[in-house]
Image (cartoon, rainbow, N blue to C red; front, side, top):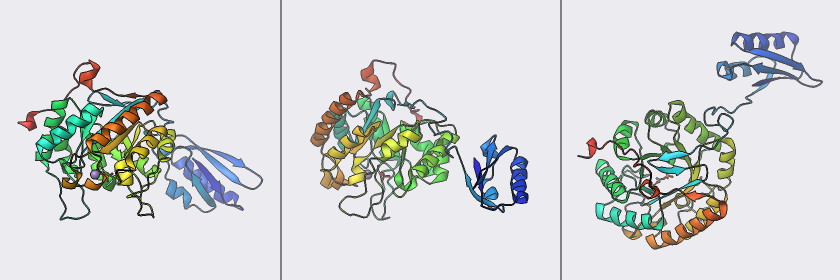
Length: 358
Ligand code: PEP
Ligand code: MN
């Protein structure tokens, strides 16, 4: 961290800043330039109270040199992290292909959709059992019943399942059924929820809030990492734009920006980013071309009957086509769509405890 002093800061003010720094347990290095005087702080930055230094007389600015997301930063961990979702790897050249309906619906329909996306090459099945809805009158999800269906469907096709957890009180329950916990855009800064999923050992899919900066997203990831859960996959799902032509504004540049700042994988969600089935295939490919570690797409076999997000769902046949193109893109980029554990011939990955399924 460096402290930049105001032009004309007096010796007394400079001495006072140095004394405060030393009282915080750090050493200081004074550098007097022609126009500016700077104090460099040497030692453990976590001991520094930045706000208190900023208020001292004669101080112009206090600038951190290291990012505040210490555990998430690439400086802390130069190698790209590879997150293991019950045998499916995401990151470091392994692509996570997440597909499924917005909401978990009836069992037969889930079976049909899962079978088709699995055959098309998806490696994680998705579906929300707890839905964060703008309207309290809209379908809120099937709750635990939905979790049971999701688990059964995942087991049937050997696919890990990801589902959203909206309430810190449900983290334990959802962890009993799901291989991966989704924290949705609306909850990206629900710090109690982040702390709870951080205590769980399930991998977490953390979606970018619709008005969140990249630094905000990384600080939210830091909440999870700081609780000891290092299995975090980030997701760019579009931010609020000004133009209603698309549901959100797909920030494709966020992918390489995030990858420069953190070792955590980042996938893209062109379904929520665009809200338009015709735009999902080109944006999925754009995301991969930008370096994304996977793609998250909503698929439904009868969008007009979908309980949520029907208008943006791809039909299974459309998913098959884009899935083929994404594999071609993966080959071009020298990346691999991570196989399911049952297809990779490896040991069967640990499943969530099943006592709650009885
Ligand atoms: C979802 O995945 O269905 C969802 C609600 O996503 P988001 O939080 O990105 O809106
Ligand atoms: Mn949705």
